[in-house]
Length: 165
Image 1 (cartoon, one colour):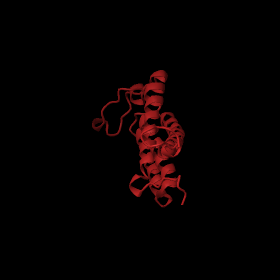
Image 2 (cartoon, one colour):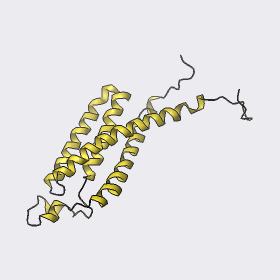
Image 3 (cartoon, helix red, strand yellow):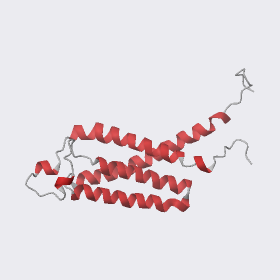
Image 4 (tube, helix red, strand yellow):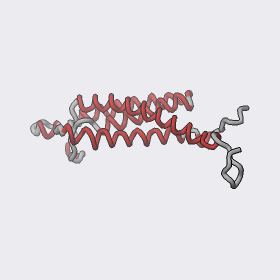
């Protein structure tokens, strides 16, 4: 067995996936909510077309932010892509959960158009950006995780003196 390799027990192997999802959702907030929405400033369909009857109108609160891109689609696809990539590498036998997450993201995206709170292009942009951000977040989390778990193996020090061996 390689002495430089750190063995991660089963209870900790999914932590990198959690870190990746947090990174992805951070990017969704920065890129979508803070970057694109206020700068594009696209009005929602129910504002542009007030005479259209919206399904379940009484059950949904009116959105107060702009429409482009769909934050729900962006966030769900970013998380789902991260889950899919993570489970493909961590536990390939559980990859089906990542596929299920992607299918549920499609349902979320469809619901945004069906409920008339987003245009199809808002949802499509959220889908594309979410897949890209999910991929980038997974790669960043893996690099950070590998650095974090192997940092003690880089240099060995004498106890209590901080002199290199």
